[in-house]
Image (cartoon, rainbow, N blue to C red; front, top):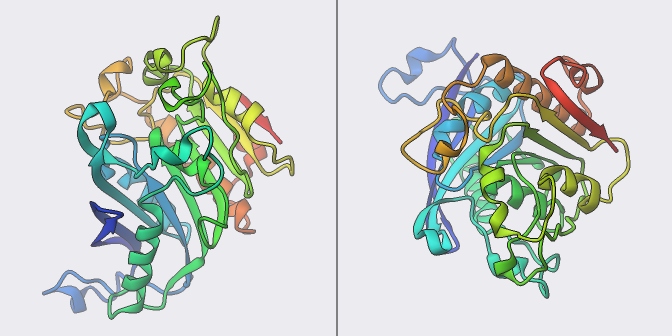
Length: 318
């Protein structure tokens, strides 16, 4: 088996978007792809559940390719994407697709705030129904949504199968639901998320971006830990399948490799290009085990064992 990618575009409610579906290819049939590069799928474990990775602001999706490739080896298919849209005062750039009006005090929780997720899954369904190498092999009844930074926040706010058909679980890295006062919420307000499926929140103890963003929320004295507050205050689910895991010595961009230092706010991390490879390995193992448990599959290593790793500084389960 080799990991291959299929590229497609979609309309994210008016924003142009480019996506890549990573899938297990059949390395015994490479001759068939000699002229086209379209490698037939290795369909042993098909149909494959779908994992969506939602990007951070101005973080190119190539940053998450390493994780996509790792998860494909678990018998999954993985979609990364980049929509180009408004970033508010920051102009235009890469966005996970956020309807800020849906996060206002009078509308939050009443509708989806993800503008790209629905169109992305529709585009994937069309791809899986045509004559592509993955035709008939993608299981859109089993969907896991993950995200980094702003993408993780969108994933948290949309952890409800009413808004994401087939949703089985949500995971995020360096994300939270403390909302900016500019949206009309009170100072340092953490807003509730649906939490209708298992949630895993991952974070790094040396997150320079979250620390530098404190002024957006104001009013919080002492320590500023919106990730932990989100897990403890915003997620009511208590079925023993949701996790908070903080990695010691990890920054905001530990989930990315290689990190593009020409874009986004990577300069706020101490050294975003020098993350210990063991941290990435542990991150992928945690995500893999969480997805397996959420899908009712046996993980390679249990989460209970993984959270005892020496690189983990804090964890909670509920």
